[in-house]
Amino acid sequence: MSRAGDLAARGWMRVGTAWLPFADAATPELPLPRLLRLGLFQVTVGMAAALLAGTLNRVMIVELRVSAGLVAAMLALPLVFAPLRALIGFRSDVYQSVLGWRRVPFLWTGTMLQFGGLAILPFSLILLTGERPDQRLAGVLGGAAAFLLVGAGSHTVQTAGLALATDLAPERSRPRVVALLYLMLLAGMLLGSLAFGRLLADFSHTRLVQVVQGSAMVTVALNLLALWKQEPRGAVPPVPADAPRPGFRAAWRAFAGDRRAKRLLVGVGLGTAGFSMQDALLEPYGGQVLHLGVASTTLLTALMAAGAIAAFALSARALTRGGDPARLAAWGMLAGVAGFTAVIFASPLGSAAVFRAGTACIGFGGGMFSVGTLTLAMGMDRRAGSGLAVGAWGSVQATCAGLALALGGLLRDAVAHVGATGALGPGLSSPADAYGVVYQLELGLLFAALAVVGPLAAPRGERAAAGSFGMAEMPG
Image 1: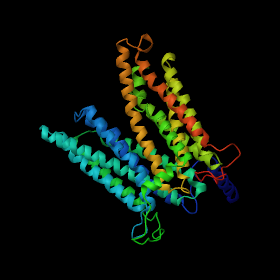
Image 2 (image 1 turned 120 degrees about the vertical axis):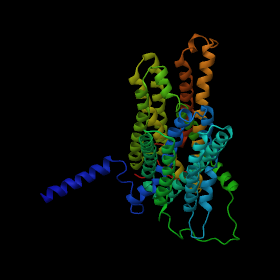
Image 3 (image 1 turned 30 degrees about the vertical axis):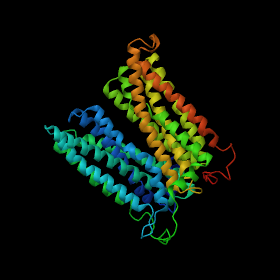
Image 4 (image 1 turned 180 degrees about the horizontal axis):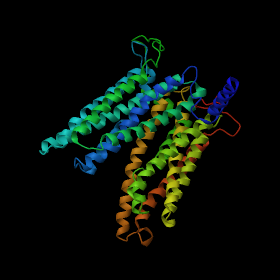
């Protein structure tokens, strides 16, 4: 019986390593418990996104009667800090504390910014319930400051955390680490949404304040647990105070002057915009065009998340087996093309099943594209600091996602308004046509991104020995 048990255990270990994509993400240098603990910073970032863009978005508009335009402006405030992610990453590359840390001070600063924003937010919400105009004005200003602080903290924590993961993970395991960290971000958003929905099922203003305050405490606790004893003290040798320090402008010019780096950033911007313009349109499209109920359109988020999780799993497995991350990103864009094509054809076919399949493909393609391009960026630390490379990726990704989201909504409204007057002819007069214009623009952006990223892929059977991205020893 003992021998049979040993054989069964060894068999399950082989199955787990072969088929569970994150079973072998751990290495002796970065064991699985430590890796999972490090990924908690992604959970807090996902939780903050779920709270601001999901729960508070609805509560402020419906229960607190704040105008939708003002809430949208508050949600856009974190984008102010998105372009600074490259600077944050660079500073974490060259910063040296008295304890020899580089990344930990930035993780701590970002955590305090998150906590500060979430600490201000409950008092702003209380003021928003006031009857006097000066109270509501103070609530709006306080809410804007809170959103800005939470966004700045999230950008700082995520940039420094990804750079720290790059430092700690051996090159052979980075693709799996990237996929696992993305999965934890998605888990933070999903679990945060479920928790906030359950806690606020019996809604009251007092309960809302308690939930936001509790989120602030949980954020600090998880981030402290994530950074505890992750970066070795003294790993960075002290530098004399009068020694010259590298400047950001010079480092950025050297980084952006690399043709392959520039191509990667342009491809990230185009591809992110191509995947993000539909973020606020899929559910209205399902309800207005395909006449799906609220419950049915709510499931679209789950379908997209399921597609992204499948992409993370497949990406980790493919990169572990020696796959090219640029080629992986290209496959993700092709999956997105298939998804948007299905969504467009769902209207003339009148098929909710085609629409759902297209939604899942979009989530799958977006996840694969993100993992592929981030893996490329994390492999750039031979020519540039990993913080600068990851920060540049995050800066372009976050900025283009926000701008594309706003542009998608504005374009859809403009086409619908002009089409309703008949000025565009009978071919663009139905509600589906306004959405279709946005989806077709996204197809064009994905094809453009495919043309930009494609040349970054190494020829089949070859590994670029002198590539700018340091991917010569991709795991095989």
